[in-house]
Amino acid sequence: LTLGAMPREVVEAEVTSSLREIPGAEPRQQRLRLKRTDEVLVTSGEIAVVQSTLAWALRFKGRPAEAVQEFQKVVSRQPGWVDPRAGLGWTLYDQGKFADAEREFAGALKVNPQYADARDGLVAVQAWRYAGYNAALAALGAGNYDGAVSGFKAVLGDKEKRYPEAEQWRVWNGLGWAHYYKGQHKEAVGAFQEALKPKKDNAEAWKGIGYASLYGLKQYDEAIAAFKQSLGMQAQQGDVQGLLAAAYLAKKEWGAAIAEYRKVTAATPGLADPWI
Image (cartoon, rainbow, N blue to C red):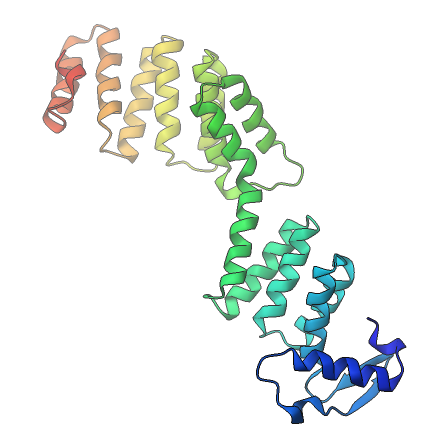
């Protein structure tokens, strides 16, 4: 439907028909004065409503490019109207333009934080953003370490940069553990060190370095230093306290090992390993 290319009487009929389908439209609202401006028929205050209806119709008829154009016109005229902005977001989502869709959903939620359609849109975009990471994490949990390594690397090398840059330390953590369980301990340490660059207080990365140093590389001093760093950032880690004791034990520093084991048994008396 191209409004500007239609005879006046046809346009009047189309506009009136569209408004009848809008809940709450009064008969007096249907009697519109139309004028031609730049080949677009403009009404006194109602064109945005008609244009939004047209945009939704185009979307549902599978004509997304035209729908986007109409939604953009409405959003430009009525930036505080959230429904067409959410419609624009969903249409962009249908086209695979997820980052653009995310911007529109977020814009709608700035106006109305409770608008369900826009909130659902953001959830859908987040599923796209985190799909690769979640798949790699699932592979890691299932013991598919080759798949996990390739999956985490794919997220880090994604040209679309879907995964939020501020959270990429999580991906490096995951890659570190995937390398660790594959027995690639040097690669694990390297990945955990990368995870520390954007997030200095990454207790999990220090823990991973400690694991790889203790059990893989047999570098006990490095393991002790890493476990201490992790505990300094997150004190209540009974497993890390026990690993610190194990590193002292591996170095045959009996007094230090006993002192650390006693800390674990005092904090978690039901844990059997430290007692053993």
